[in-house]
Structure formats: C-alpha cells, structure tokens
Image (cartoon, rainbow, N blue to C red):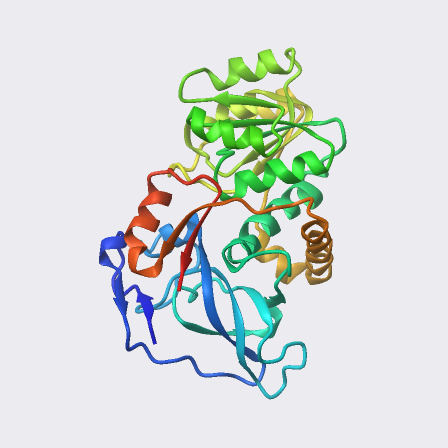
Length: 325
C-alpha cells in the first residue's frame, strides 16, 4: 500500500513515499481504516527528527490523526461496522492508505464535516477543549490570550474561548493570520512581530492583564506573556512550536499570584477516560449545531508531503494542514 515512511531521523526530505508498504495486521480489538485524509501537527515535525517525547522504532509511518472509512473490524469489535465514517487519534502511522487502530482510539466522524475537516479535529479540538475546560476552568467574562492564534490549535482555542464567554485576544506573526483570527471571533488582535506583546496586552486590558494564556508557541513570547498575567491567572503550557523551551523566572508566579498549568491531552485520555469521552460528546454537539466549524486552509495530496511539512515548519499554516490520500 502507499505509505510515507521515516527510515532515518531528519527533515522532510529524508522521508520516503512508497507504494509497496505491507498492509497492517488486524487485531481482535482493532478497526481497519481506509484513510481519506490525515492531519499534520507540530509533533509530526518533531517525531521525524527523533525529538518527540515518544519515539516509534525506525522505520515508521508518521501521522497522528486521520479520517476515513472502516474497511474491516476485529472479532471483538462491536462499536463499528464496515462502511462507517470515522476519525482516529493514532499517535503515529496515519500517513498511509490503511491503518489498524484499537477501537478505543476510533470515534464516529461528525456527519456535518468533510473528511478534510474531520481529519484534523482530534488533536486540536480535543487539546483545546481539555485545556480551557479542565485545566484553565475558563469562565464567562474572563480574558483569554491565544498565542500562535492562527495555527491549528490556536484557531480552535479562539472558537472555544468565545463559546465559553471569554474576551479573546489573538496574537500572531502577520496581519494575514490576524485577519483569520478576527473572522473566527477574536475581540482584539496583536501582531507580535511588529509590537511589544507585553505593552499591547497592557493597553488592551487597561493594565489588568489576562486571566488565561493559551501558549502553543513557547520561546521568546512565554516570559512577556507570564508578565502580563492578571491576579489568579492561568498560563497553559500547550507546546513549543517556536523551538526553544522557555525558562520562566518563578518569582513571576509569586508576584502575579498566577499558575503555570501543563496541558498533556494524550495522558489525560488514559488517566481520565470518562471525562475525555464526555468532552468528545460535548464537542460533537457543537459541531452538529454549527457552533464549531474547523478551519482548513492548507490541503496537500500525500505526493506533496514536503510542501505540507514545510508549511508547518515555516509557520505559514492558517488553521489545519491536511494531507489527503
């Protein structure tokens, strides 16, 4: 079958697109999915370089999430049948024609979404909903600052923050990206490539600061964001798309009376599965009602995998980057 294979760690030019990769073996509790589309996320950039916290053995197929159609089910599977449209959060292995996934990592696809839209919802929406609901306990009337706001998780944080009743300040690196953020409902925007993030937040909040920071970027923006926290603020550590892991002076948390809160959605699904399922059910209602609509602006056939990866690496993405098969 067709598959994008990582045989040695490195950049996307080291990947190998093949047509003769063996089809996966179906276990008793597995669902075999004909992959229609797969989401490209920042962990996919790290994992091919050997820099992610969980590394599959070489050679492996990258790709942490996908949408498709059930082609077969294992003997003990009773939640799905052949022909069902589904999504899956796989960790790795999605950039190929077929993938076998444990049924617990497979979910019915929201019927209002296309395969391209559905392919990118698990990592982004699941992460942002968990972050804002469980980790931040975001309340109506609070102010939410979203860094990297035009990216895959950033756009979902804007949408969900608005639905939860927050005032949303979107920060991104270009006016084009910020225009998308405004379309998604951001109340205020900051182009942090042109102005001081700290000064802009101070002006937009009348010196009060922000109640919640959603930070998938890290790097140079982390410290000024912490310095811009309101009393009892919560700074959500989502990821480090800029590369460097920031070193925050902990005296800032004392002076601000704020919390630095880790968001590890993957572990949450194993530690608190019932709450995870409840989150999914609530998100599905929001999709069905039209209150959430995934932003997909960059779609590449798998043959253009290098272009897709570079869109992510060069931080040109607006919304989700999707690979189609």
